[in-house]
Each structure stands twice: as structure tokens, then as C-alpha cells.
Image (cartoon, rainbow, N blue to C red):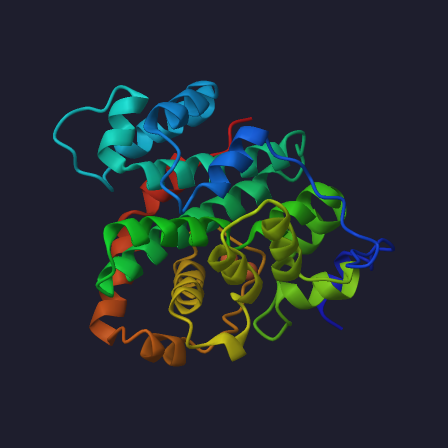
Length: 293
Ligand SMILES: [Fe+2]
Ligand SMILES: [Fe+2]
């Protein structure tokens, strides 16, 4: 019997597609931004005013704009300047990610350390997916969408923390051995659905673009190998785990790394470069996205 089941006894409440999941709400303005993600219809002014209403978010955006990721020559002091330099899509992605993590984790004092690790993991995956995407010759704008896919791939875990804080916190935090099943197994066993299925339910409810919902649903599904964005998220997920930047509740590497790598046509040298890139940025990734208490 695996360690995780002993530490976190089976939970009596189960998610159910039929009974319906109580969908946590996020600010309406955020839903509007999500829905216009691929329409280019929201203005920089609108985005700026949303961000300015949230001092913690404003601070994070400015830190990112002034970070080593973006070697701008001038110091970025205002949100409008950050939007101009980073681009609408990237700032929108960060606003969505930060808002979701913040609104779902309010009051989760004892689980804060685990949620912080999950956030750092998600940020690392986001940075890497964007890098992989641009590496493959895609446009910068698509790279920004790739960033969002990485940031939200484990959305279902955030929901589980919110819904079953103590129980999921214990399941998440337990150190699993290489031979234990993935956390998805325990989620399904305890709650009826795993984080991929729960994340997809929310993504659909909130009107996320279909490609984003699909990444959230299929990022652990080996039968989905061949869809580039899903592959890129899978690869970045494995890299973040190998580098131990953040933590997403799993210690084992369950997906077939070399198969994903070859599907994406990432050579060993490119793989090494990507790993070195993320390792160099470790401190920045870990530092930027600390959840404010
Ligand atoms: Fe996952
Ligand atoms: Fe993950």
C-alpha cells in the first residue's frame, strides 16, 4: 500500500459530473479578459485599470518586467510601460494566473507552503513552455499563449486545495517514492476525478479558449502525444520536476520523456539548453511569484 493513502485516508466526499461541482467564482472582469484572450478586443487601458486595482499583482508585473527574463535597458516603473514592453497577452496571462492562485488560496494558512510550491512549479512550466514554443519557431504571440497553458495546466490542483484544504494538503505534501502511482491516481481514488478532469470542468465553465481547456485535460494523457501544445506542456512539466523548481505533488517522472522530446523535435542539445536556461532562472522563478500572505 502506498504511503500517500495511509497519510491521507480516503475522503468521503467525491466530485461528480452528475451532481455537479460547486464552481468557485473569480472576478467578473477576469472572466471577461479570459473570454477575449484570443480576440484582441480588450484594450491596454482596460488591462491597466484591472491590474492597478490589485497592488500585489501590480508589484509582480513590475518585478517581472524588471527581471532578468526581460533585459530591458530602462527601469520599468509603470504598468502601462510594462504592458507596452511585455505585450498585452503576457501581462493578461500573468493577471489571470495570479488572480486565480490568489483568489483560490485566500485563508489557506496551513497549506500555504504547498500552494506556494505549486505556484512556483506552474510558473516554471509556463516559462519553459514559452521557451519551447518559441524554440520551435512559433511566433512570440503564440509563445505568450503557451505561457498561459503552462501557468494553468495544474488548475485542478488549486481547486482541490480550495475544496479539501487539509485532506488534499496531506495528499500533496507526502513524500512519494518513485514506485508510487502519480498523484492523479490518489485524486481519482479519493475525489472521483483527477486534477486534469476537475481543471477542465472549470476551464469550460469560465469560458477558457478550447485549446487551453484541452491542455488542462490532457497534460498527463499519453494517448494525446502528437498535439504540439500538450506535448510542450508535458515536456516542461517533466523538466520542472527534474530541476526540482517548485513542486506539484509528484516525485516520479511518469511520462515518456524521450518520446515527447522526439515528437517535438527537440534535440538532446536543445533539451540541455532549455534545462540550463530554467536552472539559471531558478532564483527569479522562485522569487517572483511568492504568494503574498
Ligand atoms: Fe498535472
Ligand atoms: Fe505539473
